[in-house]
Length: 194
Image 1 (cartoon, one colour):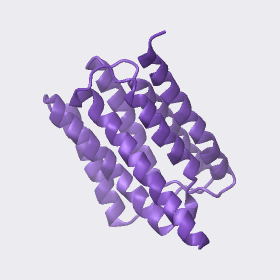
Image 2 (cartoon, rainbow, N blue to C red):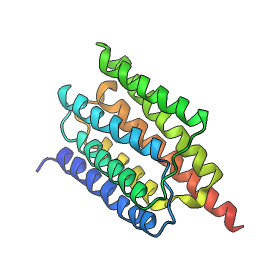
Image 3 (tube, rainbow, N blue to C red):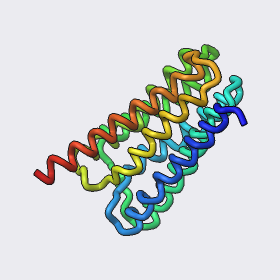
Image 4 (tube, rainbow, N blue to C red):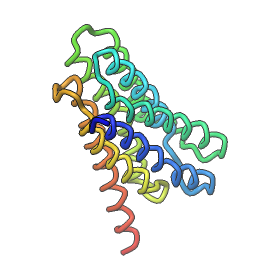
């Protein structure tokens, strides 16, 4: 077996494994996901996976499909368990709207590099309310999901066939975002314990 498919499969398994403790904490009502962020991520990663498949990517898209599935499960389960944070501030909806705009621009532009930049901006727009939520309420997060997301993102980079911006930009961004969120969660946990 080639090494790139192995890393693609491994990155998907790691991201899904990371979701189990988070789902368990949702069930126990310890984790409170920011639903707009998770919903936006679910949409953008699934669209991103199909777009990357169409552009010739193969195994690196495995992490995006796994991530999409996990995002939608988290949204649905947190709503069922009534722990979902459905923020109604203007700020959250502005960034969710920017995320949707980024998705639309990404899908309508016929410029691959600019489309990937729009996808990254959209993903970050969906994720910024989550970062703010973590900063304000760090105990509403499970750090293990962010640890496995960062590890999975690292593995996915080894599955990239060609290190062009169109194939590597989005996976590298995901690795950076997940690592930053992990560091933020861990810092907040330490700060509360001191």
